[in-house]
Structure formats: C-alpha cells, structure tokens
Length: 343
Image (tube, rainbow, N blue to C red):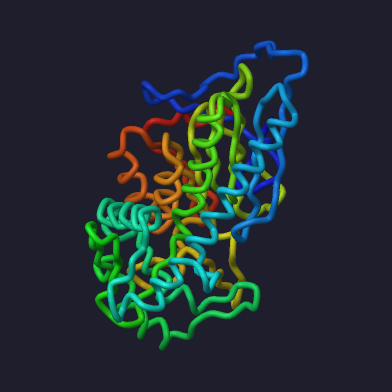
C-alpha cells in the first residue's frame, strides 16, 4: 500500500529521515507478510470536510474491519459538525456569531483545540493564527472571488490570535474586537486523523493509516514494510516529487494547489499570511513529519507562511519534527534531520 499526500500516485525518489530515536524506516525491509490466512487490508474513502477522508487497516475479520472503518468515519463527521465554520449549527459558528458580545461556552473538546492552536501561535510567533478567517471568509475559490485591497486593509487588523481570550474555568471563548472570526482549518484535519488512529489503536488494530486531505496518521507499519508517503509535485497534479517511508508517524502537507484560483498571473489560495492578510507566496508546498498529526497539520501551515529560512529554523528547534519544503522556483529544501535522496 502506498499513500500520497495530495496525489493519487506514489512514484518518486525516496527520502530518509535520519534523526536518532525516530521510528521511521530509512530502508524498505522486504519482509514476508505474516498473518492469518483470512487477514487482509480493508479500506474506504469518502468525501468529507471539504476533502477526501480515507481509512485503511489490517484485520482478519472483514465484518469487524467494516465496523471499525465506520467508527472512524463517524468520528470525523462528529468533529466536522462541531468545528466546521460552514455549518451554521456547529459550536464554532456559535462562537463566531456571539463571542465579540459575550463569552461563549465552547465545551471541552473545541476549547482544548483552540487552546492548542493559540499555543502554537505563540510558538510560531503568529505565523499560525486561527483568526485568519477574519480575512479568509471573504474568499470563494469555487466562484473565483477574493477580497479587494480595501477589504484586506480594513480586516487585516482583526488577524491577531491575542484578540481571542479563553476562560479555562468556564471553558468559554471571547473576542476582544467585533469582526474577529476563528477557523480551525489549519489544525482540525490533523485532529481528525489523530482521533481516528486513536480509536483503532484502542480497539486492537496494530496496522492502519487514516488520511484527511493533506494529513495522514499511520498506526504501526505496512506489515513489515513502511508506508510509502508520496509528496505531490505542486505544479503537476498527477506527479509526485518524492516518496518518504514512514512508520507510526504523522505527516501533513500544505500547498498552494489545494484551494486556489489564478488571476492575472497571481495565485490566490487559502493559506493566508497573518502579517499581510494575503496568501503567502514564497513556497508552493510545505510538508512536516512528526509523532502528532495535530502538530504536523499546524506546523505545515506555519512553515508555508514563514518560508524556507524561518520555517526550517522553526523545525530545527523541534526535536521530534522534520520538514521538506518546495519554493516557487521548484527548489526543494530539507530540515537538518533528513537525508535527501541520492538520484
């Protein structure tokens, strides 16, 4: 089984992750698959959360495997109904409607993820900021609509994670200014795949992979071999720039090819730079590997916004995480713990 981040193919040169202590397969071990005669891979993909969510797992009981797959999809749907700004009935939509007027009870789960998001904002010095939606709400990529310069200038001051106040005792959220909005699009899919793998782990599954868009979380390995994760070529939809062997690891890719439109030679996409209120343009793709999909999801967005130098400096200070980035000229850069492929 091969899995691609943002692509249907998995060709390309393999990259080794060399940082000590990581459970990552640097070399593919060609081992025989050992297991019960009836055991096999079971999986399914469905359109969810504005992308595709997929679950693949190894199990010796097809009926139980199907029940486990349904449990992961049900969890993804539950989280989507809690955290999607596209659903008027979601709890986060209630926060966006009311938190500028009064503190809004968020509940333990949403409150906890917002807390993590704000902590990551501090870690990244504001490169990751869930208040980007104050400007991001004005984009409609399907309709090829974007905010004009006046709107961006007026709303840019509302992009500031420090405008979100949390009350840990009441588990409530309040906005300091009118017009502030939050959106967990840069972290929620990582949370979904992490939760999905957690469900499978606690129900006895030892080998699986759960993917939501550009975020994947692996449980164990591919029955004696690593999962080969393909990183999409940002400018060729059916091509993979490279493949990375991973075991029991998370990987997230943020790219300017996910939701975008081109206008007058400029690509307008969904990854907003908090400092400008406009799409970030130094990179075309940022991939982060690590033990926690919530972090890899947020960090891939952060690195994309920060660019090559600052982004890889950020990753260098996080011992459990590595990154591969591709700039606007197609040049590929690796964090210090990676071994680039030998062509």
